[in-house]
Amino acid sequence: MTRFGPGEEVFGTCTGALAEYVGTPEDKLERKPSNLTFEQAAAVPTSGLAALHGIRDARYDLILDNAGNHSLSALRRALAPTGRLIPNSGSAGLGTFITAFVSSLFLRQQGRPYLSVPKLKDLMFLKELIEAGKVTPAIDRTYPLSDAADAFRYLGNGHARGKVVITT
Image (cartoon, rainbow, N blue to C red):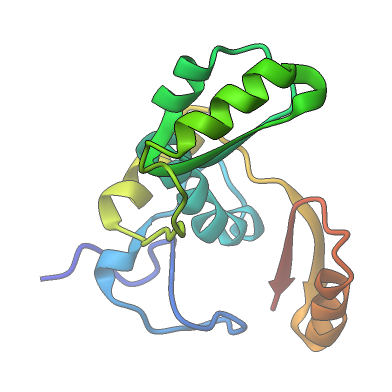
């Protein structure tokens, strides 16, 4: 039994997506939020799920404290168990910088890689946020499939201010 019928509008994750039709497991899909265009829906899953996981699940692996307006204990509570705190001595003051350095000799908080793994329940939650108007995808540019090489060149220049979507 499948969750979707022919012609239902869906969005989700897959391997490779420069095509009008792709194959992907059903648990990688959710019904497309009704308030999004197909281009917006294509822009959501990868970055949206990574942001969701980073904000909701992960305490922070790295905090670069440029403002110096939180105590070291508050910053350490926000860190993952193996996270890293880097106070900026210019705004935090030399005492805060030294204290952070010395205490790091006795704590495990030293950093680790971050990886977002797509899960159906998270895609469903992301859909709810979108439909409630709490998340809106930001699309910088769209390119037709025939100009996909131009889209990748644009991305390679590092100036995209949102998602770059390739349409059919």
